[in-house]
Image (tube, rainbow, N blue to C red):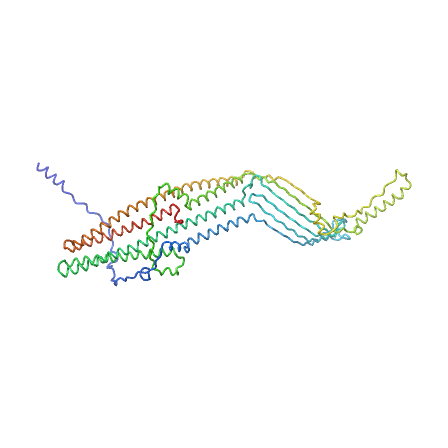
Length: 570
């Protein structure tokens, strides 16, 4: 029995923990010690060296919107998108052309008819001018209107006019019936440019909203940093007061000198906290200034910014579903999605159109005018020879006819020297009159039908457009889900911040009550310096927690406004 008890007692005694195996640590910087430094200066760069300058939240937002370089870049891109619309519209501009021209042509004679005088070279001088307009409509129709006039001097022996004036007026029109009907490359580019302009505007709003949210968050962080610095300074002053009390009690012999040392230690700790808080203020001031200015030489950098804005009004807490609906209606990202989807639709419609065969209805009308100065037939060897032969034949007929009965007499040949009609005789004005009177019209109509065999390019482009449409659908669903998650997180953060603020306020009030009680007990000699200092630390910590909860609540309000797309209107 005794043996059993001894074994049980041995089993009840805990065994020592095994000795841990520690890594070998080298000797780093032998003799290292913090150097002696003078007493800290009360100045911190950007915090206490300059006069305090109050700034409200609306002013901070206004300065950010007017000077933030990111927003300037976004605005430049939005203007570029507008210029791209103008550039795309240029495809439908009516193009006017005019071409004056002079030609001097010398050709070798080919035969007695196509030769110059005395079988010399053919010399032709042309002075002409042509003008016209042409273009394309958004629906794909192509049109052209052209007019030209020319004066020609030609020494060819068989010419009946020298000089002569041909004029031409023509109208041509082409209507696509399949491919490029309804949408073509130019109209697609215009549609995409307009979509890109709307997307750029939505992106500008999105960037603006993000900038406003960023400014507001930094602003409230700066509010918190300044208030935290005040909390740390108040804790430091309370500890200094406690130190003075300890010194008096120590001199009276009521308390031990170590109580003074304890107070001195806590003073050093709180003083370090004050400088850390001021450093936080300086960092946040720099962060806010970087959002409010676009120049490193701006006088704002020398300002000691102190927020003056009141605490944000707490919004009514609507149901999550209402917040999501508001977000999907107002968020610029949703408009960007719509424009992305619209661009994919345009590309798909164009790719489908390009798989069709090309069937173009073509119609044209041309009116020709002509006039000239008639030449003297006698100056042409051909006409002179023909006239002599005609005269000889008619002389023979005249000699034979008296010997023939009247019914068998031969009629003389008519003269080949037929006078030129009056409407052909004249200069350029007469040619234009003939053109306007539609003397020599030409009408044309036709159908152009063509298609590539295999059409691999159009089919591949269609497949690409369909995949881009699928990508747009996936991105739309993903973005909508992301916005929904952001709204849900924002509402949950708001609810959590409210609860934390209530709890932190209660904890702060309780800590202050405990500190007051502990100080009364200390003055009555029923407490110690250590307990009083611990209560002061607890009060400072709880004030900081309450301050952080209030800051988080302000930022939660900002996040709800950003997530629901109402931050700009608010």
